[in-house]
Length: 244
Image (tube, rainbow, N blue to C red; front, side, top):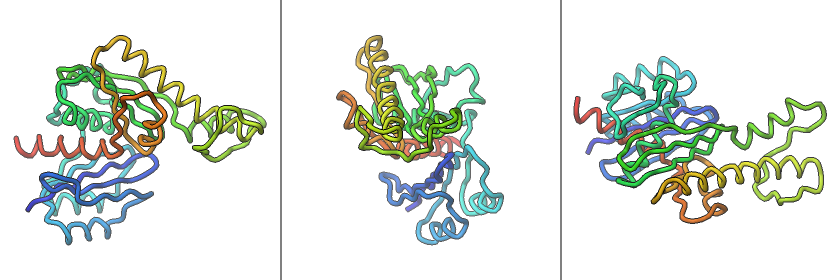
């Protein structure tokens, strides 16, 4: 049996997944994935194909190893995709955003989709029912909001994320935590409601580390798929190697 290796190098974390033809069999997420860890994966699984999506540099030794051991692709807008891309500047479109919508259209074919990626930034991406990707918006993520309030003011402290923040903070620290957490929530809820007002039958799909948390807070129905980018990379990889 041949396996696929999908790698997503993000701003905060490096993630990878090994897929059999029908399911995800292994996943790893950490600050940095080493060459020795990649070698261990290739020893354990018969990996025939690999794809890399990156927003920051990856060592040349890792790329060379992937190229030597598998049929290797780097994520780019020039690859065959399961969506028609109507973004006016495709070369500037985040690879993780494109991978996420590619995963979403496979999960929910024939539906208009709002795909929300919750990470360092929050990304909102709209796909029509006919798999046409139209674009979206980007705003600061939770940690970025906390850092910005500290860096761009003279006296506000840098505080940690608190997912149990109440609506009304009783100290400055609590007020900052509440404003960041619930401000982000209200932003997401407002954007979702606006799309739902204009688009009948819209399905909202959350991805990223905060997907499960916000799914339980937002109005139903909301679908959470924390590994959506990795699944989308798999779809793009198979679409390209099967037609190469």
